[in-house]
Image (cartoon, rainbow over all chains, first blue to last red; front, side, top):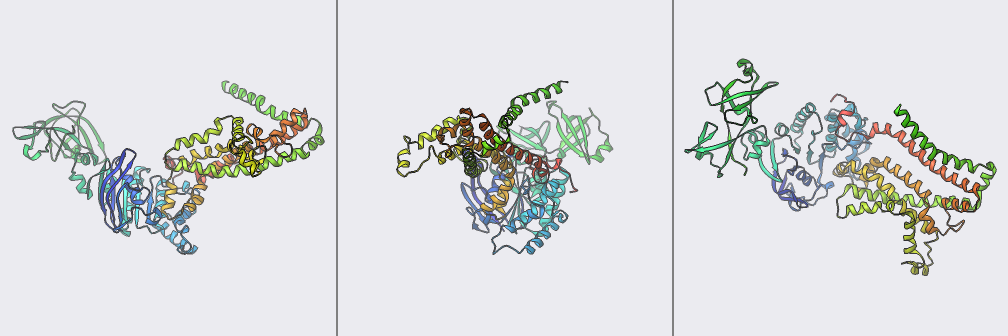
Amino acid sequence: MSIALRGVTKQFGEYAAVENIDLDVPTGALMALLGPSGSGKTTLLRIIGGLETPDEGQVLFDGQDATLWPIGDRKVGFVFQQYALFRHMTVFENVAFGLKVKRRRERPSAEGIRKKVQELLVLVQLEWAHDRYPAQLSGGQRQRVALARAMAVDPRVLLLDEPFGALDSQVRHELRRWLRRLHDELHFTSIIVTHDQQEAIEVADTVVVLNRGKIEQVGIPGEIYDLPKSAFVHRFLGQVNELPVQLRNGRAYVGPIDIAAAADVQTGSAKNVALIRPHEIEIGDVGTGWPATVVAMRVIGPIVRLDLCADGQPIHEPLEAEIGRERFEAERFSLGQKVGMKFRRWQVYPAAA
Amino acid sequence: MARLLLIASALLFLCVFLVLPLLAVFVQAFSKGVAAYYMAISAPMAWAAVKLTLLVAAIAVPLNLVFGVAAAWAVAKFDFRGKSALITLIDLPFAVSPVIAGMIFILVFGTHGWFGGSLKAHHIHVVFAVPGIVLATIFVTFPFIARELIPVMQAQGKEDEETALSLGATGWQTFWRVTLPNIRWGLLYGVLLCNARAMGEFGAVSVVSGHIRGLTNTMPLHVEILYNEYNYTAAFAVASLLALLALLTLAGKSFMEWRQPELRRATHLPRDRLGGVRTRRVNT
């Protein structure tokens, strides 16, 4: 099912949780709503699911105005961060809940329910756990039960609110990949809310970045990361180094480095900053580029993070650079070593006033 | 050493102020032998008091069960204007003296009260009759169940209910199948406390009852009357019955607390973020 939001606004008292949002979720999409806390992403999800009513605007399900539909009529499956499993019911009873509360005419037979639940438990790889209670399962297992329970009523759209937020990183990683595979098999429309950029990029085919109740950017994951449209998106999607840009004699400089013609970095603002990701810093020999000193090094698996103190920069604000482990071992960097620094890529934004 | 001293002093305090008085009630009650005890509690007036007390509790507790659940539900699951005023109102019966609670009902329903005239015209007796006693008891015991449930329901949040609704359950189905099972232990505990107080309430009931023997005397009132008549054995015999009811209530509570850890393990705990850490992990 396709979902569309038209001019959706929701206030909580004086505070606008979401403001004039337009968004299209095509059928079969797996879309991530990404943003920091307070960005309105959860409110948007709850409006789509019918847990909140927008003050203004429309929610369209397959082109039909669903703004005021009660939640039970929307056929949405909800998955919450804290699982919200019914504690007094077994795994089987949890998954069967949505089938058992159907009106008598629509309710499957006991045998039908048993079969359907069994199928879903196989799908989430928990068929062995049907008579366990939620408390006897791990976090990852509980979340899979919650997913099976949501899918039992054949929802037209699956809404996941920080579904993996309470899990440790390894389980989270596994579940993301599993969810992606499941989605590729079954093609249900899903919307996942997350504050974790890596999660959004890993799992979704479209990422919507939200900030203060507004959409900053919509795009495929690679595009969002590589071509951020605003400094906010650039910062939110990963580590960045921020350096002031000076305009002199028609050229733009970051430190002593001439990065471009001034005309190419015009933002309409008098003060500008260049945002540079750690892996976009190129480390070369002394005498090339911007002289800098290695002040810290940390090996993180396949990459090595170097803190560089560039000449003329405050000593307590070193830049962060990343290089591959192989190069690090081949060149044997050491603390205090002098290097020369260049930038492979950068993006210029107006500096915040 | 310090720990021993602390425990000993706590025990001593408990003995002097709780166990001894309780023992004294039973000793005094049986001081003239079992026959006299039996005589005292089987006296028609005593029986009338027992029956009235049970009747009042049987009306007040179920009503407060419904009111309490409704109030706690409203406070815990919804945001609305005047919510804090409602919470304060729920606490009101705890804050005002029971005597004043009784006076309120005299003022409202008494012969010279607001509705006294019209009630009299329709031959409805509220004050100095059973309805007044029931009303006063409901007033005084109102907070017990609501107060017990509000923190439980607040801690559980709304997600269970939201999930049930999204799965197509109706409001009633959600309440009976999801909310009620989630709060059952808190509810039972609240009911026990409410019941204990309903049976034991003295002040408010004393004001509205009129102390008509055999008609409007509850057990606590009957104890007082007997006592004022220097009929100590009978007074303590009835008091011992009342104490026994209270002890049964406490036993019920202990039994539940003893059962609860087990139930917790199976159905209760992990709603918190530590859930994954605290519980055994079975190979994700």
